[in-house]
Length: 258
Image 1: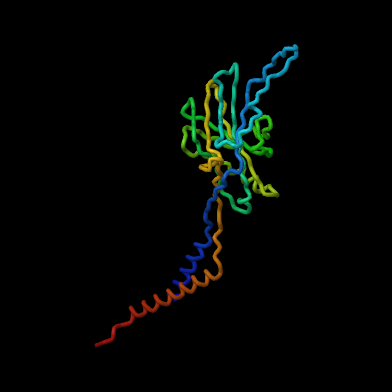
Image 2: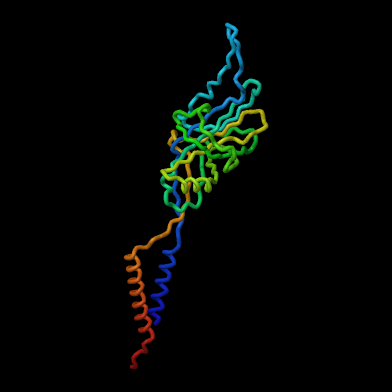
C-alpha cells in the first residue's frame, strides 16, 4: 500500500509541475526609426523685386533624418519671434514573432544618450501612428497621421539609461485584429512646456548598432510534456517506490536469534 501511495504522490507532483504555465520574454528590435522636425512659426511673406509676393518656405520640414544614428525629441523656443522648432520620433516594429503567443505585457524601451533639460524631469508621451511610412522618405511635410491622445507617458530625467512605456493593450489589439503580418508604429514627443527655452532628449537609433529602440514582450507558455517523458517519470517513480519498500521491509525484519 505504501508503495502505491508513494507512486501516486510522485506522479501527482510531476503532473502539477507540468500543468503550470511559465512566463517567457522576447525582444523585438525596431525595424525603422526616424524623427521629423517642424517649424511652428508660419512661413513669412516676402516681396520680390518685380513686386510679386511669395511665402518663404521652411526647408527643415522637408528634410529626412532616417539615416542618422539617433532619434531626437526637441523643443527650441529661445527666439520665438523668429523661430520655434520641435521634433518628434517615429518608431516602427514588426509584430510577426508575436503571432499565436499569449502576450501578457509589452513595454516600449529606448536608451537615452543625451538629455538637456531645464527642469529635473520631462514628460515624454507615446501615441499610435495610424498610417504607414518609410524611414528613408519621411519628413514633417510627408509625415503619417497619428493619434493626438497618448497611450503612455513616462518621465525622462537623464542620459545613459533605459526608459520604458507600457504599450500592452495597443499591441495586443493590433496582433488580434491583423489578418496579415502586422506592424505597429509609435510617435514620441516631449510634453508641451511653457518655458521659452531649448530642451531635448536624444535616444539611440538602430543605425548605431547599440541599444536600439525595442519592444520587450512577456508571454505565457504552456509547458507540454511528451508521453515518453511521462513514461520515464512513472518508471523512475515505480523503481524508487520498489527500492524504498524493500529498504523499509528489511529495516522492519526482526533480527535472527543467536
